Each structure stands twice: as C-alpha cells, then as structure tokens.
Length: 259
Ligand SMILES: [Fe+2]
Image 1 (cartoon, protein in one colour):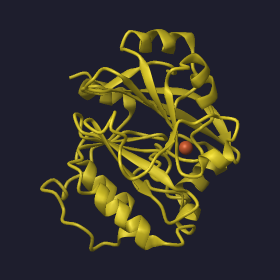
Image 2: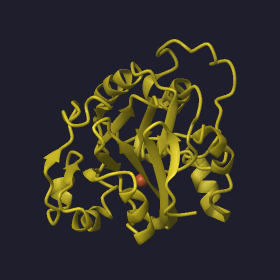
Image 3: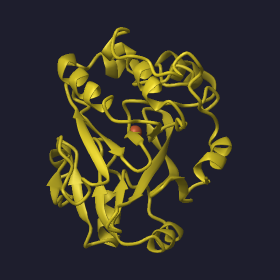
Image 4: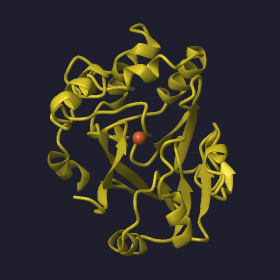
C-alpha cells in the first residue's frame, strides 16, 4: 500500500510510494519521516507527494528538512520544496551538479546539522561515484540506508529479472549493494572507514529504501551485507550473531512497529 505512513519506532515512520523504472526494473520507492525532539519533521528521500500523505504529515508537525541521501534519490524533491517552501533542502555530495534546477540550502557531510544532531547522526560513505550518506536515529536505534544495501524478497521480481537480482546480490537471504556497484569502489579504505564508524552506533534496526527492514540485530546484518567491503575479520559478533537475522514481509513486521 503506498502513501501510508507506517510507524517504525518512537518518532520514526516510513512510507512506500510508486515504483520508478531503473534499467528495466521497477524499483519501489520509500521515504522515512523522523519527528525531531524539538518537533520539526525531517524527511529522508521523499516519495511522490499525495494529498493523503500531506494530511497525515500535517497531523505530526511541520516539515522542516528535506534530505536526499545520494545522487539517485532526488526525484521528488522539487515538488516537496514547492509544497513546503519553508523547509530546508540538503543535497548529498555531488547532487547539486546533477540537479542545478533545485535550490539547496546545504550539503550533507560527516557531521549532522545542529538542528537534528540531538536525534540523528550521519556518515558519508565515499570512495566510489555512488557516495551515499547514511543516517542513524538515536531514539529508535535505526540506521537508514538508501542503495548500498538492497534487501528484496526473492519473489519481488519475476522471470529473468529475478535471476539477475539474485545474481546481483540484492535479495534476501544475501542482500547488499549490487555487485557491479561494488566494483566501482576505487578507494575502499575510505568506504571501510565510514562503515567502521557506522558500526560504532548502537544499531538495532535497519531501514532500507529498497526491500525488507531489519528489526533485530541490525549490526550483524550490516556486517554480513558489507562483508565484500569489510572482510570476514571485521568486528566482533553480537550475542545473537549465531542465530538468524530476523526479517520478513512488511505485513509481519507491523506488530513490532506498533509496539
Ligand atoms: Fe534507490
């Protein structure tokens, strides 16, 4: 169901939008909404803005920040800026050159803006043309990834697309970045350093733009998803690491989200 805000934890929601075409694949879109301690709303990777979504958001507060985590998640920024002209828009590194038509108020870096720093931390994962900014929401212990982890259910695509997706390493139970993207990391030292900083966060849950959220033992999930980058030796395993990482269809997750 699209345009529906789903609670993911204290002060954090997500909503799924329509699919967009990407090299012959229908990619689902997802945004994350965070209500900061001071009440402002922080919108990550905005999806197409419907009237229903606007009404639901209005009930939660005022949209103050619009954030694009990478150079691919910018498609609906302009319409959100038009709808919320007082919101500040932040570009991921490189996006200003790609979208000169959008007036950005700032560029995302390794330090969170003071307005959201009490609630959200962030890290730039560089070292490739696919620079992406990852965020961590402290109250819900949720880390948010755009494209560097894709966690589709195996039946999400049909026919040859299903085969390509599985071989590309973007499907459960072995999700991650698309394999051809992994080859584009020309400076893995930079990317590894960013990932190691991410792994210092007390992560429990993982939200991704494409695929199933992770509800438990998120740090173990990340170490597995980035084994191609970190290697098998990185980090110690958590007490639950010997067990299965818990994830599943969104419908099954709702009980956990609503607690
Ligand atoms: Fe994406």
